[in-house]
Image (cartoon, rainbow, N blue to C red; front, side, top):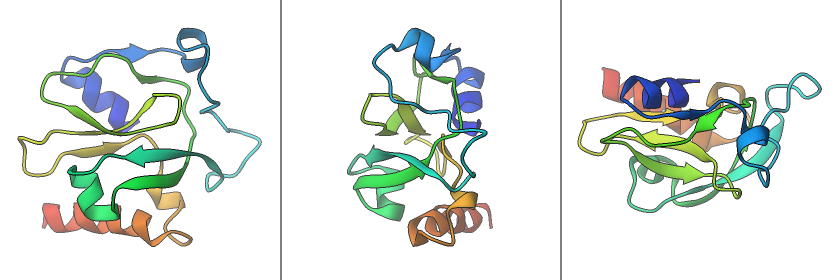
Length: 128
């Protein structure tokens, strides 16, 4: 939710329902039939972004528990990771010290993927 909230708070817009607004979209809402750690799809992390400096660029499998998505980006934000269908899955504000908002839930994936723990550790270091 942080990804969507950040975008709207800074002036961006949302797709209220992915399947309604993006007919070719992958499934992004895997609740309630799957546990929170279920890997719903991959995202592609763009090189040269804050997220790529933490987890590396390229493919990253994530859980997917949402039916809304970023439509128009707010000024000052960039999309640093997207699903294969183009749905934005991570936002950053490169002009700020540390603004990173993900669509997935790394807290549910930390035990099986060290990169998820690295995201949370990077946040803790930035907040210290």
